[in-house]
Length: 594
Image (cartoon, rainbow, N blue to C red; front, side, top):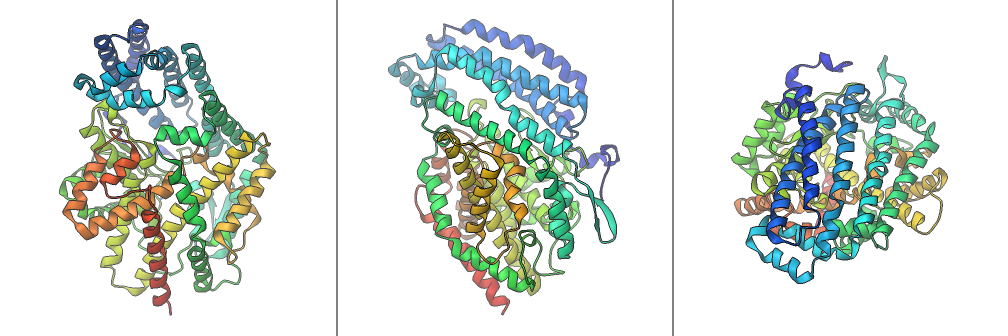
């Protein structure tokens, strides 16, 4: 069902932000209190060399940050339900601004701690009283070269108050100001939007797919210079921050703070370049099975096998997810059921609701999930995906102290994608209908194509765009379109027509405003496939190791955390395992289609 207003949606399909604050008035009261409370932390300036004072300060700052995060969680999720509502916009802007003021007030902390002798910092790391903060202190010790003077830190904190606006302005443009027209689908006029566009690309009529594709991109092309300016500004901001902190590049800065060796990034790109053959083979098979004279970029998302998908209503999708996640045990499923039953999830799309899907943790409450559920197979897997994020957050928050509960973005996509793989493996193992099995094999290939190959292509585009700016070259719309089209042709190969509109795809990717994020989707699925196979093969031992991984939060570097789950991304092995999985799945589908 399509809803035009949020008021039309039954309460059971809306997340309950009352678990954070009962009313907006309660939020306002808490905001007023914390606006004054955080200022007491400035009294500790110049006193952090004393161990007892430092410990007191760290515990007090944790208390305040938890309150700030609750305020932020409520405001940003409430705003995301209606991005054009002025009151919600204002609340979100105010907490964002307060975070900036807090960051400015705390600018003395890193310089003051980094000025301590290495021996003193090491003694704190070894002190059991500081066990909640040993990771933070160890990272501080390691990152001394990138911490600036107090004045410089304060300036950078102030810059952060507006440099993040590139992302926010893009969101407002993408979710509000860009107007998509109506198109005719099955004889009815349909309002095109992010969710309906996705559905149209899965429509069996190529004419509908073509019309949706061209109409959708026309709206972006009309604003391409604005979008190019926004993205160039974002990239330049990334490069400025890296240079200011004494890094050689924006990528080096991003990987340093993620504690990820550049070899992992290089392994990913090199592996993809060495694995184009099976992807090109799959694209050619898709063209053959679809029976089309010309395979277009807008033909890559439609199911090849008709009357074989498993699309269903939301409640039935939740039941399927529970069955797919059964190998993870009853304790895991109990929490998943609680999320379904107690309104942790905002389910349906409305015109001014934020597009896409995400999971957001709120310290001391529980994770929340935003969906824009449509009755498609992809959206069933989206439920499993976002639930993986939520469960990773749940286990980490349950096990770790506040100072260590936040896991690195590098591992953020592992649990989500592992859930998807387990669901798919369950469906493949239980399906008797050969046609549906073909569909599921195709779905798995497309999962790997879009999450491994496509995200690696995005990662390569980010690498190129930042390198251009760092070498002093302009990042114009024409330059980005040319680079993107070149990558698209290299990755997808000769069997598909690289329609002119596809060169503008970079302009609609929200994640590009979080530099060097997307490659983690690719390493995430690589890790997830390896973990899922271990769970299905080794049972309880692998499940226990996986839950240990989920519970680690940020207590270790992310590459080491994955080793706990049995995946070592510093070697070529995981990359080879997943490439072979793609090849084996493709061969199985080819055999069934003879």
